[in-house]
Image (spheres, rainbow, N blue to C red):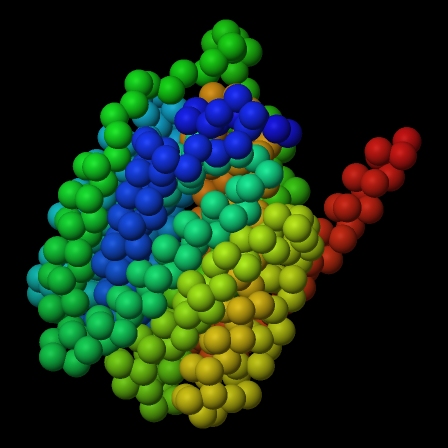
Length: 402
């Protein structure tokens, strides 16, 4: 599919100056700052729950509640961004997200954090589909691997800085992490005010009865989701148990934060290369490579006792998986129907969050039984996803031949 997004010239070559360049870099900078705020608290949240007397199952439930909230909000948020524009959804989501942060610092019972996390993720979840749709608006179809790689690099740049600094702040007092996270995300919301105002986006050239329904969108997205969902299952596992696992191996809060940074480092450093690979390899091969890397490395983690080696493996993992997510996001944007980019991105994010919820809940239960079981489940799901990709390509090839 080839399309010319608003702000591109008639030759389908992206404009390098003016409104679109400012919009793109404002979004990328604000996104990085947002991820700094998220990186401040995400690795520390399991430690806060443990400090208040909660165990691994409660940690899994807290993360699952956030994932459920994001899954519930993202399709409506994508629809809203198609109707009223990307800017109001992005700014409103970030502002409300920042306001929830201080609630974590209040002396609530551990179980209350489940509700706080649900509200936090519900407000913050509207941001992703609007920002992903805006990136698609600004780039042509055959270069979206590069564009989404830059977006992921801005994500991981924030996560590269946030966990390290958050670990240092947590060394003073855990609750301080959430206050600083609120201030950083408020700064990101203020920066997004520089995004240009745009008229509401409509379902161009479609009558209401012709608009693509959600089930049809989901069917169109299914081949991409089969590769992307196992990646997010793995993320759900790591969000839930990684901090606890490193701590059990003797890591300090600073080293926990550093482990997240080592994973992010190659994603940021090789963003341009990863984006080019995403466009050249294609979404199936890039996604399959990412699945194999996540699955095989998850299999190795339970047999490594050294905290230093565990941290260094993150560099390899980040390098091998850098092209996978941008390639899958780019393919999602390419198959979006006209005027439904936000809804398509929202539905895609719903699928990813469902997988992440399953991974988080499973990890909490399996980790309680034996830590290695949580990592082995990531291996199993990733390898099944890679196999499903191969089977799907065979079926599609056979149907095309027929």
